[in-house]
Length: 129
Image (tube, rainbow, N blue to C red; front, top):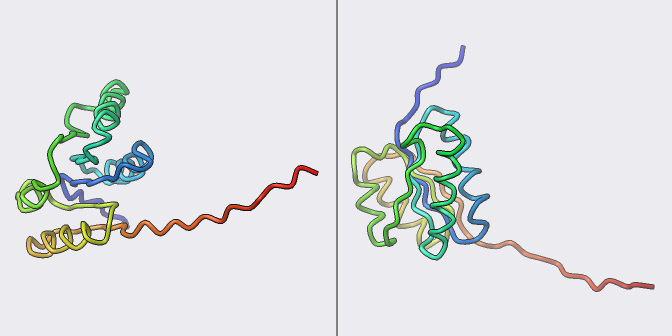
């Protein structure tokens, strides 16, 4: 027996790198679980955020399934405090994660954090012989 019980509105705080992929990998499971997503994208990729919302609407999704907020990072804590936000997910720095986790914990809200930024690369010379 599987019981699906959506949480409601999930606040997704997304980084500038991979601005489309990061949103869609959070959006898909959020919506499949019956929730809506409130997107707070990095301010330097706000055009990507608006394009994603447009794509979702143009694809036939109901208005409000994905809502983009163009707000500064300083207003995120107040959003987490808002009773209409049921959960929060963040991909970002450890420092940002601490702030989000603190606000989510204070409000007893579910939180998913992907922190760090330690994507090591090994670059090798290519011998064309």
